Length: 484
Ligand SMILES: [Zn+2]
Image (cartoon, rainbow, N blue to C red):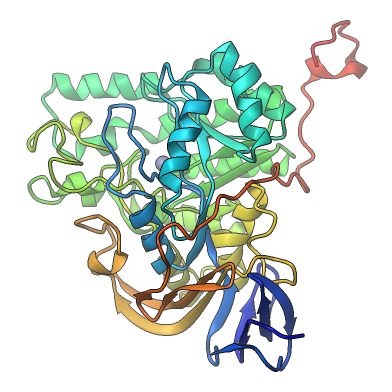
């Protein structure tokens, strides 16, 4: 067979094994994985390197207005470039509906934004206004187009749907094979804490951490899971930040719930002490749920290692340290008025490789699963996330020994800081490919604006997740109803 490209001499890493082999690429797809492949118009020497599926970033806010109207600093061009420099070949940011908007209008808006991407992309819909037209007509149309996941909020007054709204949407999702992602924090607990802190005049950035208690996350994670179990719908818990939350996820997964979850590098790498940096510096570290403590980091690493989480995602939510972002409401405001979120799309894989694989906390195979393969399965990217014949040639070639110090400039995003700045990292992506095209090579961008393609996705892969039948929905219980 004649190949367009052969990657030779490297160590192939997948989610279940590593082996020395060459990769032959033809027409943007992997055509062969075997020893000593000859030929290739273009040959890439991967000696001493790891050859893995390109990262799939499943949680990023790109060209997205928050519910309070702040536009993220990265659009699909800068966000995808930053992702590519971080070893990603595709990403799935959010397409956010705000109250009053139709889903069709939202998708049309994001299609125009996404067209600038240098890597393949899809969206998770954020649903904040589940009217009957949205539930019965617009969402099913979005699913049919391959947008098979969407996110809802249990917190924020402008976003949270209430438990009944969640049940409605989970039911629609289950019927269409879609997966519901949830930001789980108890809205009233957070509001009550905010009021207590405000009454005492405690408004510095560091109080943000206190304002969103661990129990608020644990309660909401548990509630979201029980709601999903009642209607046996697949559920994905985003950015788990607490030990208690992770424990609930682990227990319910073990009991068969159609449950998926992620955590993020910031919860593994940073603590609430970062919110207490001098002056307003702490504002850089405001995100929700908030950073916790060192004991939580250890607990979350334990859960990463034990398989509680499908993915480690960045939750890249870039708001600059100026009046366009963090300080849109002024430079000396109380913490609730500071934009929430931090960047990290380029740092995700290097951080996870360095702190995970190099430090012996996770295996190389787990690294591949957590950064790419599982996201492909969970979110139905059926031609991505694996190095195997027939798959898209989305590949990251890693130097496992390169040592770097994180700088904001190396993130290649539109941000003016990185929360990981100064961190010593071992291992970095040298060459990144998307459908056979080199997009990043030795620190240089090779991709052109708009060369990424929209990914029409499949339903979530539910294998290994038998689900849960609530007694009241079980025909064998003879309740005499036909609710299910
Ligand atoms: Zn997020």
